[in-house]
Image (cartoon, helix red, strand yellow):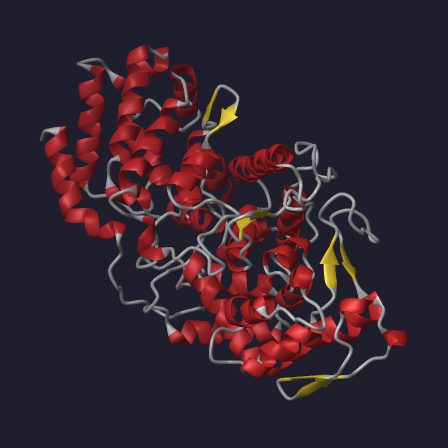
Length: 529
């Protein structure tokens, strides 16, 4: 069969894979008891990390689900992936570019901040690519998609990139930790204070932005709070500031949050039927307000709306890591995960472990049911091929993700990316093919041959096809598909023998490998995970 004919027919018959249709989901969260084969190991890696490598698949093969999940997740005490040795501006403050500066100086400052932002995103994406143990990045990315921050906000303002980095490290710290404690930390996070305008909130003019988003988008969802709760919570959070710019107060050090007593509303507040007591000017210190008001506010929310918060967060987890259909989330699964979340005092790790070790997670209807997000596509292919997508010294992953409509720390709005089927469109699908081919072409012939020669039984063409499919495609393919891929290699070899060509490391073998991978890139299920 002609290659183009096969691809055209295959795309027409399989294009629904790119936009998954509603499926009948089992709802069994009991533990998956079988040891993981290569396919199940690759599935686990696609969902918990930014994509499998052959090394990691081999590491997990033969382990049971609990052993594998423990190995990938690690613990809260594992060292955090850090950019302090690569981002040399983390302790460098700029003047406020909107503070009446001459335009040339303002634009110069904003140019430096934009450059730092790009360096920060490049660092994060490259950390995703290089990550090999105790996978932090996908979990951090998930939390970042909930607790959204936009580098460029309010059309003119920019958040200093050191604050974005600090925000990222807080999310990373709590990736497996206590969601309630994360909510407390993020309430006083410097980047969040700026983004939600809490940095300017005063007793006379309390800003309600953050309190509304805390309840609606970060913890419990619409319908579980009143406008009075928002108003009183906003009063509770008045007076908090961040030392973001030069020549401004920094009592706790640059880029740290501090408290302005004169701007805090000291009167009593009523939230969800609970009272936060009034205070006098003598007990209005930073420590007292942080512990007796901010922490009490979070305690009240999580105590009074425990079930709603648990369901809200667990549904977010399920849609992000398992199946993102807005209407096909099994009720029994969310209920059971919520019970685990509450019984573990809102710690995330037990929820992840329950979900990622379940029969439901490893069921056939879940494998390959998600469309890859831009980082999963762009970073995942680099990980699979052990290559770096760059031109000269310029990393290209950030630009690719941005053009695929996921610019990290610049979501379309505070509600995050819509996800699900919106990842694929007539605009982004051709770009996905383009960038995937460019990533492949970033690996030269010698390195491509070297990669394939690390595979077991690399002289067997069928074995190489199956292993590349394992790395690049989430679902098993039929014999017609296998025969198509064989024909691509045979045509590229032009009558030569695969075993002898790969043994010799010839140019023909490199071309055949490249054409084989390109044939996989053109198949729609390459874009699923």
